[in-house]
Amino acid sequence: MFWTVTQSLLSGLATTFQIFILTLVFALPLGLLFAFASMSKWKPLRFLMQIIVWVVRGTPLMLQLIIIFYGPGLWLGQNIWSGGEAGRLSATVVAFSFNYACYFSVIFRGGIESVPAGQREAGQVLGMTRSQIFFKVTLLQMIKRVVPPMSNEIITLVKDTSLARIIAAYELTFAGYSFMKSDGLTWPLFYTGVFYLLFVGILTLLFNYIERKLDYFK
Amino acid sequence: MAILEVNNIEKHFGSTKVLEDVSFSLEEGSALAIIGSSGSGKTTLLRCLNFLEMPDGGTISVRGEKLFDASASVSEWEKDLRKKRLHFGMVFQSFNLFPQYTALENVTLAEKLLAQERPDYKQRKKEIFEEIEKHGRDLLSQMGLSERTGHYPHQLSGGQQQRVAIARALALKPDILCFDEPTSALDPELTGEVLKVIRGLAEQKTTMIIVTHEMAFARDVADRIIFMDGGVIVEQGAARDVIDNPREERTRQFLTRYTEG
Image (cartoon, rainbow over all chains, first blue to last red; front, side):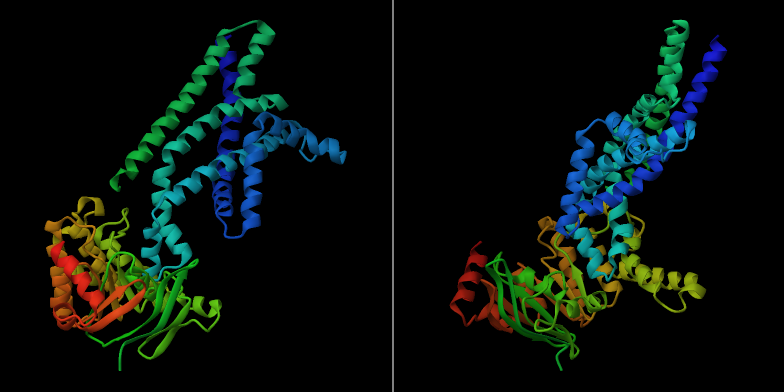
């Protein structure tokens, strides 16, 4: 039985891991884009960003996921998500990416704004372009400042992947829970917890490593 | 002909007039000190020259080329803004070194980025970078920092950081080097080393504008002095005359406060 449970959990972990990685791949650049939009000189864009962030942060991710997965089918009369596990996974990644991009954007904006104006001015008087100033001067200082809050968000993301269960995506928590439903076993639930702990443990080590790597400047 | 001509510069923030009808010129190879109490507009004037602020009126010309004309459009101002800025170098009060780069990298970064625009960049990248790094090392050793090229800003004292900042400003060979209260953020025992470097630059006939509160230094090093108060130039003249025999009552009062304080 232990072997069967392990196999199921590993297969659930694969889905969890895919949601996690794909969400980061899309949400990190999108979050940066949202951060720039929320600092735009053009007021309507700033206002629009505020509304989006308010709505996305103000409603449950689970609700957003349900709407994104079932909504198109009910409104358009045909499902835009391909059937089966792939469709569920795509809908999950879309909902998660958008949701997390909003949270990331606030952290990124804080990071960019915390870099002193003198840094940008020093770049300007040295004849650098705006993009040179951002990539060569601001970016690394911003990254250093956002690593601690980002590590919080990213660890939360690991556990939020379990919300995908609501649209029947076969992720880690679903896998563990299914043994309770079918066989009345509770120990797979604890075993599932161990998987999450290991996942988060590895991430914590990674974040510590990044923080140490960026410790060379102040 | 003067290297820098500033005519009738005006600047206001909202309804507050910060600069009013400021005009002066600067000869190549000479040093100009700007003195005055806080809020007199000295720093804003330097920021206008470096195009960190856009003046609301007046003109700025370098070597006869009009870099700024308030009667032209904003897009005219923004055109080639980067190139215009390169006529001026700027040393900030709070150094503003890039913390993630070593002293040498701070000095060479802008030059390396500019080199990308050279037509022979791709073929000669390695040689160009070697030249730039040699130039950077030379500048740092001129600042007495040849032992500190690989240090990060937080590993350097304030005086050392400011000398790196001076080397960084010199790296792009500006026509005019501006200092915005270069020693105001330093502990008293560290101001000497920075002033000595600036004095050395004056002896080499570097064209400079120095905003400073160090009156004795301004008198000794500058050729000319401008005294500003309330956004206007109250008095300008040869350095010794302004400090030793001010013509205006306001200048006299300011200097008395300084020698007493």
